[in-house]
Image (cartoon, rainbow over all chains, first blue to last red; front, side):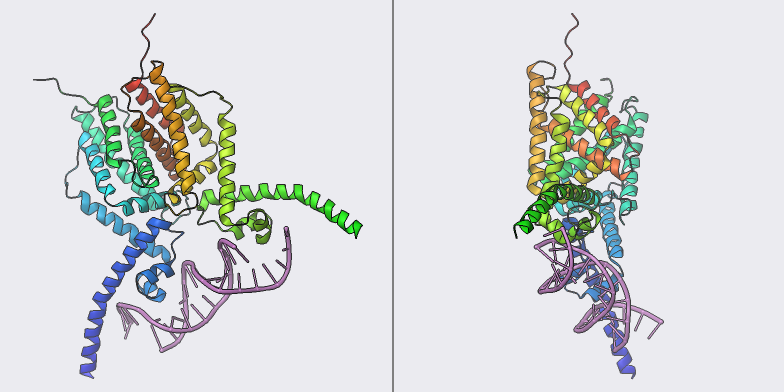
Length: 214
Length: 214
DNA sequence: CCTACCGATCGGTAGG
DNA sequence: CCTACCGATCGGTAGG
């Protein structure tokens, strides 16, 4: 009896890490499916099959399809945070846009991440979409960060005070999203980072303040 | 027998115009559904129900779901052509971008058209999507038109010969697509036409050549 | 244009 | 009362 209990406990412990592994596999497959076919085009039955688990097994880890979506979005956010908190402190002015150029470069090496964002963004413009609020808060976060960086650039005298911050922020986000769409649609035949860098260069030509030579 | 045939023919003739009317209703409903839920999220059964026709009735007019999609895309192209061939001749230089600003203004009054384009664009980045080729050729058409207009502007001396045509074309398309996405995601809380006009103004500040005063 | 269907699949839940 | 699932099946809908 004691032995049986012990065995059971050991079995549970093993199953626990096996469960974590299964969760990871499910997340990876769901991520790929949402990237390719969107949330609406994703079926939990197919995700389960590809992850090598039964449908009921999947629903044990993620009780609803929507819970799976949210887990995928959290996973994406975690990856992005790991990528950017390496930089640490808040960047100011043009350094922020250089960071965006770097992001474009990184994204070139992870088309699935780009695909997932583009597909989900379009779907989630619908206010009834389960990721609608996520999309809006994502825009707000990204925008306010760039906003602050540009304002700091004006404060430290490297950015012209005439720069219309809100409009430039919206245009910059638009350029990034639009270029990603073209990059995907053309199967990578445009240079995402180079095109975005060209946009940034044009911004700098118009709004940068170069300190007078000493 | 002759009478039956005659009746049948008359009935067919009547059905023909009724059929055209049904086609129109189906197209309108399919357009709205694809705009809201994409092609993959659209069910022909639901389109049929909303159009007040049976599923088999719909499949009489459009034999496959894909045929319905193509009809909707053709319908969209027809609307756009009607809108722009009013202008007639090819526009040169900055006039082309003013045309794009006007298009943004028009699109503000037809959010469904914008929604349909954004949703379908994201879906159709997938090379296996039935609208993939349509999307690519749409980009090619729009790009080559703007390309030609900018080249003409350089030729007639109103646009700087240093303007990198290909990059500016890609950025301009990106700005329009990206702004449409934001416009939808925010439920119209940004001014699509004004933001795009701000982008065009910045382009002009950088690349316009003003003739010397006489 | 209709009724009457097809094989397959949807998201989700049952008991074990 | 827990975990990590299982095979089977619910009512309903998909495109054709």
